[in-house]
Amino acid sequence: MKKKSHYQAEIAGTGIYLPEKILTNADLEKTLDTSDEWIRTRTGIQERRIAQKDESSSTLGAHAAKNTLNAAGMTPDELDMIIVCTSTPDVLYPSTACFVQKNLGASKAAAYDISAVCSGFVFGLSIAEQYIKSGRYENVMVIGAEVNSRIMDWTDRKTCILFGDGAGAVIVKRVEKEEPIGILSSHIYSDGNHSDMLIVPGGIGREPVNREAVDNKMYCLKMAGQSTFKMAVKRMTEVSRECLEFNGLSTEDVDVVIPHQANRRIIETVSEKLNMSIDKFFINIHKYGNTSAASIPIALHEARESGRLESGALSLLTVLGAGITWGAAAIRW
Ligand code: ACO
Image (cartoon, rainbow, N blue to C red):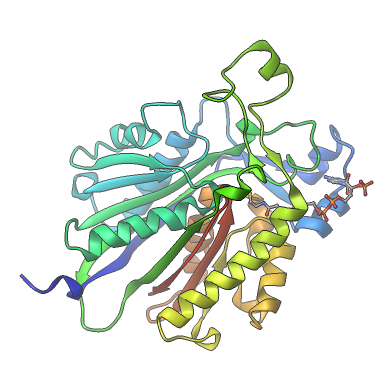
C-alpha cells in the first residue's frame, strides 16, 4: 500500500437537477410590492425554480445524484458514502441522505446530512476530501439539495425574491497520481456569534410547532440583509486568499471562480476586493436565485458543461452562509 499522502481527491463527475417550474420576477410582481427592475439591479436574479408538491430535497438530490453517476460512468453500489448538504431536509429525521440512498439503491454507502446552510456543499466537500485522502474510502458523493421555497415567507419581499430550489452533486474519487489533481485543499470556518443574522427560528426545539409560531411565521427564514452582504464580502474574500496562499497559488493562477450565488453585487464586490476580473467568476444567479447548499455544485456543473473547466484548469470555490459559516476550496481539473 502506498503512503496515504499519495491519495488525491479527484472529481469523477458532476450533475444537477432543477425543478421544471419557473417563477419569474414578473410573476412575483403580481403578488408582491416589488419590481423586476428592483430585483434585477439589486440582486441579478431574473427567475428561480420552484419544487412541485411531490418534490423535496431528497427527490431533487436523487435526480442530481443519478445524473452524476451517469456522468462518472459509475453504479450506485460503488459509493462508500453519501453526504447530503441541506438546510431544508425532507423530515427532521431520518436524514435526507437516507432517502437518497434508498432511491439510488446505494446499499454500501453510509448516508447522512450536514447542516451548514449555504456553506454546506463546501463543508461536505471538505469531509469527503478527508475520507478520500486518508485512504479510508474510494468514492464519496456530495450532494447539495434544497427546497428553499418551503421556508419562505412569500409576503416578505426582502427575502422571498432571493431564493430558489435545486440540487447539484459531485463524486469525489480516490486516485493515485503524481501531479496535484482534484481538491487541492478546503478551508471551512464558523462563527456562531452571528447566528441571528440568517435564521429559521421556529418549528422545532427552541420553539416547537404551535399556533402562535405558525401565525408569526417562525418556520420561515429571517435575514438581516445588509449585515449578511457585508459579512459575505469580507469572509469570501479573506478565505479565497487563504486558500490560494495555502497552495502557493495567486489569483492569476485561477481560471474560474465558483462563488456562492447569493447576490450578483456580492460577487462583483468580491471580484473587486480580490482584484480579479469579473469574467473569471461563473455566474448563473439570474436563472436560479440563491439555492443555498445547491448553489455551488449547480454552478460547478454548468461551468464544466460550458467548457470552462477543462483538464488542468484551476477553480476556486468560495461561500458564506448562515451560522455564520464560510469556506473555500481549490480544485484542479
Ligand atoms: N422590492 C422592492 N423594494 C424592496 C425589496 C423588493 N423585493 N426588498 C427591499 N426593498 C426596499 C426596502 O424596503 C428598502 O426600502 P426603504 O428604503 O423604503 O426602507 C429598500 O428597498 C432598500 O432595502 P435594503 O434592504 O437596504 O436593500 P439592499 O440593497 O441591502 O438589498 C438584499 C437587499 C438584496 C437582501 C441584500 O441586502 C442582500 O443581498 N443581502 C445578502 C443576502 C445573502 O447574501 N444571503 C446569503 C446567505 S443566504 C443563506 O445562508 C441561507
